[in-house]
Length: 81
Image (cartoon, rainbow, N blue to C red; front, side, top):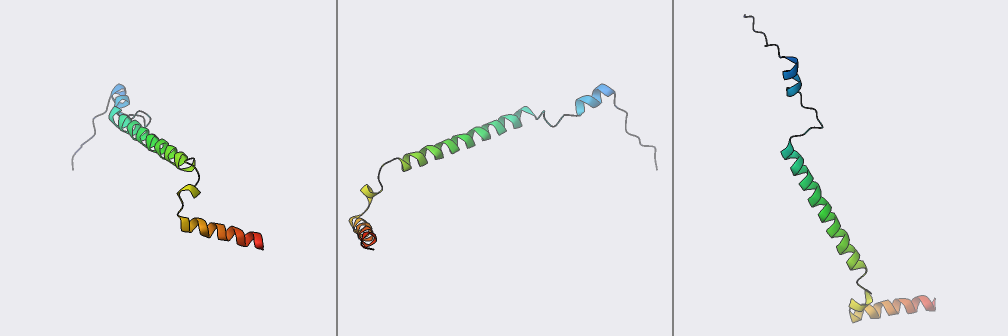
């Protein structure tokens, strides 16, 4: 067949072509940093909303009158037992 051999690279050229895994291209680093930032912002927003819902006051103040009567009846039955 033929004597097709790969050209031998100089040591300096071989080092330039071998990119370590930790040195990602700048664009992918920026995208990953933006993605991490967006995810952290969403997590923070979710935590703030949850804390506000829990600390917004008593759940009985927003309950319907029928629900309040049912709760009161349940408490009275417990105290009678």
